Amino acid sequence: MKDFHDLIVNRRSIRRYTPEEISPEDVKTILEAALMAPTSKSSRAWHFVVVEDSKQLELLSKCKVSGAGPVAGCALAIVVAVDAKITEPWIEDASIAATYIQLQAEDLGLGSCWIQVKGRFTETDLESEVYVQNLLEMPDSIIPVCIITLGHKAEERKPQAVDKLQWEKVHIGTWTER
Ligand SMILES: Cc1cc2nc3c(=O)[nH]c(=O)nc-3n(C[C@H](O)[C@H](O)[C@H](O)COP(=O)(O)O)c2cc1C
Image (tube, rainbow, N blue to C red; front, side, top):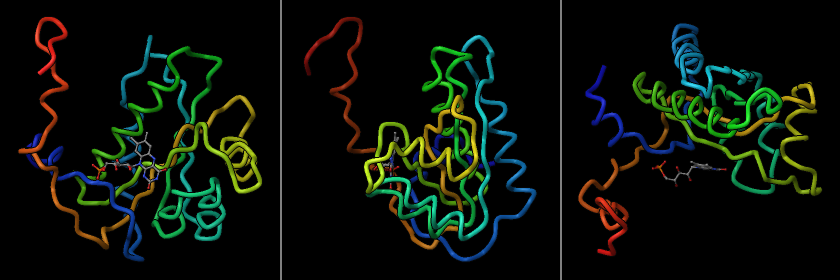
């Protein structure tokens, strides 16, 4: 494992991928990470739909008007969804699991990108959540929050600019403008 801080510095959203598949071992490691993500009251109300079929990925990429292009070209996508009836902080729980997936992928040398679903719409003004539910035959009660695209990196991105961090957003003790 890389140093964790280095991993954070080097993780960037990767939107272009090689055609190489992700090994079953790596897929398992990534899903293990997702299933170990913390949840409010340990509700573990999330569900993860793994999509590898290229035709399904193409259709999934049409889940919103723009910004879902990487889904069509990724090796595998994980739809992070949650049973919102079980837990009130469902967005938080799903978001943490999605972040775990991205960080685990980076640790394995894979690229990933978060594709927002919740609150978005298709070209025909259908809610993206409903589009994804219909496509993947999901129950109405399970809300897709985002799609994490995964694949071997076909682009290089600069690491985070550690020297340009917005330290003015940090307020010590009380809210002090800096
Ligand atoms: C809540 C959320 C929604 C995002 N939605 C999209 C998206 O729909 N499409 C996309 O290409 N990137 C999306 N991203 C990736 C962001 O654009 C990216 O994280 C941001 O530009 C910072 O770049 P970095 O991840 O390389 O540091 C999303 C990220 C987050 C956290």
